[in-house]
Length: 263
Image (cartoon, rainbow, N blue to C red; front, side):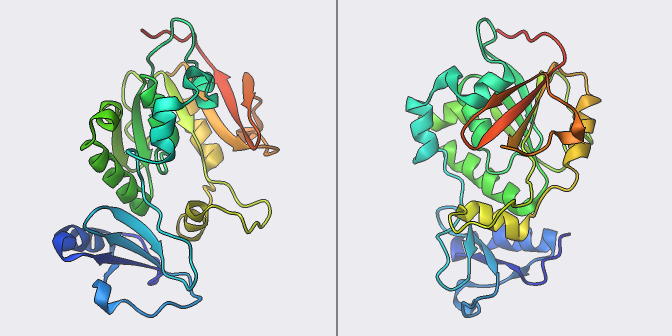
């Protein structure tokens, strides 16, 4: 059970009342019908809304940005699927997709909204995703469900599996690469913070155990560990990576432990 002191409410359309009720009961959140919602205010209140078409996280503040939801069918991820940089993508380079290495089994221990996992799956990887926060897990699970209804997206998400919980409690066999993208504290305030990042900051917060995640990954029999970090942030555990793939705003610290193979 999670406790948000009414910072998060579960709302629903009539068609999805049973799903919303089951979720609210499982995680101890208050269930509120759309017509009974409190008035908007400056207080940070979020709705996990089970609408007729999707599950979305709605910021219930005055003048708040639009809802956060996962969409693998249209928008930026669909464009990346059809016109993206392929193996030239930084995340592809970091996990080791090159030459004869065409398909890897990747464990994403901090799945979030599933974007990097989707890029890797679109390039042929099989990705096992773990998400610890049940609200984020609900958004991602719904995005995967809707993607299965679109042939192009379904061919990608069929290579993605999602679990709720800690990745290193029951680590699966056959994993080549562990991928970590821990949430980190904001280094400076910005009015341009993306709406999903603001929501994550409010209801998920940073991952204070980021070092422990890397330590747990290093205990596994895997070939490579990739850690996504903001530019200028220290290395986790103070451990220098084997090499780094650097972009404009962030970097991927790569710990190459064994030779990669993949057909």
